[in-house]
Amino acid sequence: MKKALSLALMLILAVALTLSCTGCTGSGDPDGDTPGGSSGAPSEDQEVTLSLAFFNNAGNPHEPILNYIFTEAYNRSGGTIKFDYYPGGTLCGQADMLDGVLNGVADIGYLQSSDNGSAMPELSVLDYPGVYFASAPAISNAVHEYIQLYQPAELDGLKFLCASYGTKGCICGNGGPIHSPDDLANLTIRATGNLGDSITNLGGIPADISMADCYEAIRTGVVDGIMTIRGAIYTFNLDEVLDYGMDYPLYNNGGLFVMNEDAWNRLSENQQQALQSAVDDAWEMSWSKFFNDFYKEPAAARLKENLVEYYYPTDEEIAQFQAKIEHIAQDYCQTIDNGAEIYQRWCDLAEKWNAEYPAKSDDDPDMYIALDPNTGERLICGSGVTFEWSLPY
Image: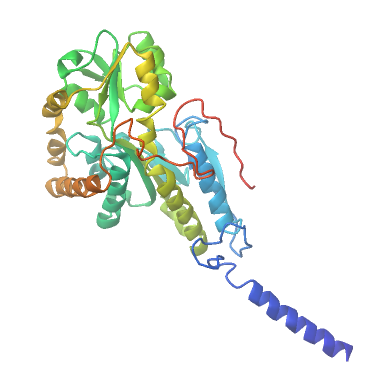
């Protein structure tokens, strides 16, 4: 009798356990919205630790977003995905990021198409002037759609996670105001990668110098100025060694978060969903709009306050710059296979997404603002951001 009762109890417990574990290795969420949910539900998947390489130093404004992804991927995978984070080029530097991810030195990395022109010809079109986007979400959405529609071969061996691009920069220097291309004549301007072609066509002399070395290069007169995103002036305190600046809307810049394809394929389906959904949510809240914050306060305010002059050119003055550089993207496309078709693809996507996310001024209260996915508050993109890691492992 006791034996029969024990067997009956064991059967009841087994059925209850089976019912309670339904979905543990599936979505884990009653609504199926987030794989693994956010509660750290148990999983039968093997634990994996992914390395993420970033060439920006620790303390960079991407880190609250990365923290969200690390935490959410862990929770949604049932605690089976963890991360080792390597900022400041400690695992892969800016120049070798693409090779590092392709060869498995890093599982995930952030790379810029402007640093990999020969290896990424289709995406590099964006780094040449000639295809103009109105805002960060416009260009970021265009990159996502381009990759989804055309699956460029340059991403073979990589799993594309998300893109974060911006559309406006600045030209700053010493020696006098910058209002027209004539003001750049014979000046040595720091402009890396494909951006150097713009400086050459504007009459200046491009210099390829790492951002970390720009402060001393400008202070000592090795270069006369810099073309970059406005937030970089803020982040690296370059306003301390610059006198004049000009807002420069004819500028695209950004990068991709990519993953080694073999590392991606080693993840279970549940783990893949957990990681990608965490990235997608972070992109929607933050990275698709991220670079707009580099064009709004506090970067713009600091430039206006600390430089002798920070100038907003008129439409007529912008047209002078555009006339000298608008041919560059088309010229570049003539050097690559199917270049005319690729150029037209980007132009069509620019028209589509510019209508969806038109330009907004610095002072527009409805400026597209990136939110901190951890708090829902506005993400401040600049130096001096205090952030404490709060990973659950």
